[in-house]
Image (tube, rainbow over all chains, first blue to last red; front, side, top):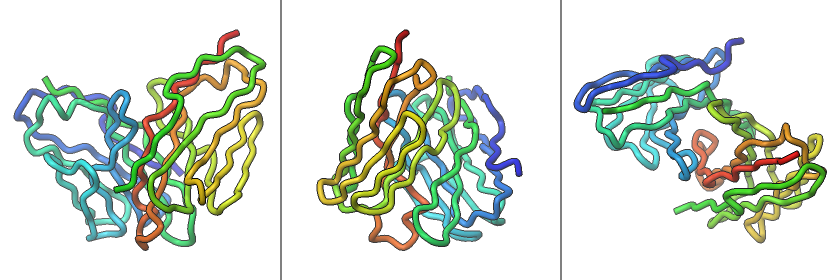
Length: 114
Length: 115
């Protein structure tokens, strides 16, 4: 299993540009989430999904869109990039069954917005 | 709103010493996670604590959970340089059925173990 994969690893955008961060998992996990990590602030939840076709907002959703058309993929779209979106973005997935299933994280995408 | 606080945020210690990282959270939860992150890397799951009084150990790390005090501790025994990393605790809100899909993280504790 590849686990959780993310592309690209690095990206530089200009203010106002749009782009999609890709996330895929091959573990048949129902739950998938996007977090951003900024220095000194831990990780903050952007959007999450509890299954194909179901998404919801997290703590910091403004400026981002998501969709979940398949169990495997959960792309994050930046509509009009702003310097405040410079961050490291992590995608995570986990099982829905039982309790205490930890989230598995992808390698991250480091995004710089100029 | 669920808040998670860790202390200390920065910890520099000598090899061979013991120390404890604390994680406090603001609302009732019976699921707490500890993760490790090396510089420039992703997060690696260390422990999942599911109930009051839960204790888990792996090597020189031991984690415990007191749900009544809303407190988890990560104890480091006889630290070695390889333990240098940032450690995060994270909590779910158990009142929501799908809470496993989203975590609230502490700010992280940056641990440096000096020879």
